Image (cartoon, rainbow, N blue to C red; front, side, top):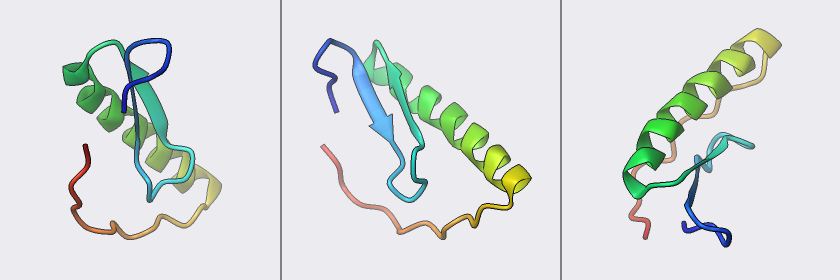
Length: 60
């Protein structure tokens, strides 16, 4: 999704609050992998339940 001030915003719907941004479309995938790893690490430390993946969907 394009951000209103420029760049791109990405999020993982299954992981509440797991959101990131990047200046480039290509960079958003790397940023999402990093955000996901940080989210999972924090969830494990805090004892937060980690949801099962919902499966693949097509996004624009």
